[in-house]
Length: 258
Picture 1: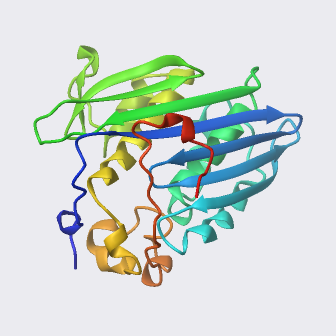
Picture 2 (picture 1 turned 90 degrees about the vertical axis):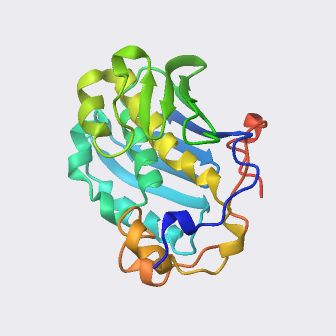
């Protein structure tokens, strides 16, 4: 089986940055959510009666595998969940393994937004390329234009601010972040960590893998997301031209340009 080190590298990595934008817009009885980044483009609308989720519509607009659109169906199992002011209150009620990580996160953010007193929230996430193993790279998130977190990172750990030094950005993140942050700061921290996780993919080019089976990377990727979970992983194929570089064109995010 292949390992992550065998993915073909992107020659330009180290000269740009990963970007993700999430827009949450509330209307009477519904919240519209949109997410776009280097690898993905998703939309969803969560309908509610003021107490619980009554319906969910979603769409996978740009995806890495041909099986990803199927993730819109398990997302509907969120119907009936209570509205909440903290995603961590309802996350244990979801089946993360059966869902697309990013579409599920978008839907949960939309559910949370239904309880806010503002009509719109826009998260902008930016993670610098880490060109070599010892380089420190900045990771930051803005909410409606206001900086919420800026972390200096290196090899999946926070270097600064000093009070967060040594905290990890992979396994173990949820445990420490849930105790360090609360409210909107905690939501933003979790959103930034997810962006950091996806940002690593900028190291690799996927165009040379078009048509390749997800199962070829089963040993290191099984269970990471919907398409890398069984039974999808056995039939998922890499699609063409799924990646975008928003390093210097953040204004193109959420335009879902083909």
